[in-house]
Image (cartoon, rainbow, N blue to C red; front, top):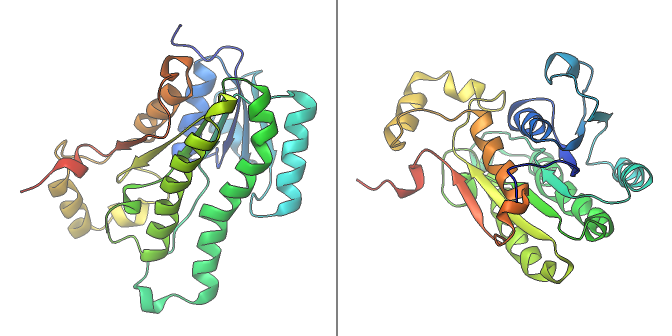
Length: 249
């Protein structure tokens, strides 16, 4: 087995910025055909290097009609799906009592329910690939309180558990399901937090590698899990956290 994704068909949600953009680029560099989904794909030319193997489809994964159109496009053009990277997500940082019902339902709809529905709809295409890989982008917030707000952490914890269940349920179809859990990564989503000196100091103090991570470092873990090289790895969660999760005193 080579360190390659040549001839693989990959779908990446939220693929025009941050971890999603880095992942799409990594998969392209390794030889995959990549379909990128995002609400705004207008500026993608300046974000991802041009490739004949790159396809873009603007749309909102929280909309049932769009999800169905997306899977229909995959079926018509590829007939299978080797790699599904569920990356799209967002956050609203508040104290729990300050959330409105609309706000936390919005987070669950985007971070969790859209992921569940898209993955369910993609199942036939994943099964057609024979050796497919699903990688869900979770977060260390799914295991620890990192001051990111309870609803966000709850959605990520649910993603971790869904990944474990599907790894067991879909193994008979040759589909591997794993997750990655980033710590603080330098992305548009964390920009406002990392700009706070006191918060940044706490993050660095908790991180043995003494820095925040880069999107490309998460993308590398995702790409590995997508490879046939990782063919005996399923139901696992890789923490891309600079050592945060193992630091005690």
